[in-house]
Image (cartoon, rainbow, N blue to C red; front, side, top):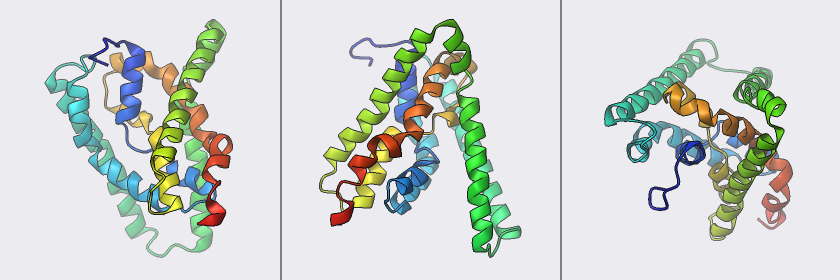
Length: 225
């Protein structure tokens, strides 16, 4: 983007999306395509753990983020949020759920689905007002997010024809297009995130429609593997 002089909110949105870790829903999305979610879960864990480190060079080259001090602060906030969430999860697992039953796990799956729906509604808060004031802009933004999200998945799918297994190929493809942009809302300055809220909101649509829109592609070789 620096080379071609592409900047502004759209450039920031794409940079944030591309530098984010996997969406926490990627294992579920992979499962909904009929494939093993384990590779997606492994990549989700590794990618999230490395995120505070991998964003440093990206944001350092992004003038919109600010000084090097602001970049370090963003990385520190990401690290803090990840440690807090994962630490809380380990404590709950150790103290209250040492040996969960099948029914408990099913209940947790249902609870996570409800929480995810609430989060998605929150991330789409900018879409409603924009639909009233400028529906054409929303339609254009939705088309852009669909093209980027689904395009990255399709390109990755065909680039990984030699992947070890079908499930790994699907997992990597799903994650290529579906990223956890919401995590940056707790770390980046509001001046950076506010202009890209519409992009983040529209981005949720192709993300959760992945099994429906690309299920035919991801299931194409399922019977032969």
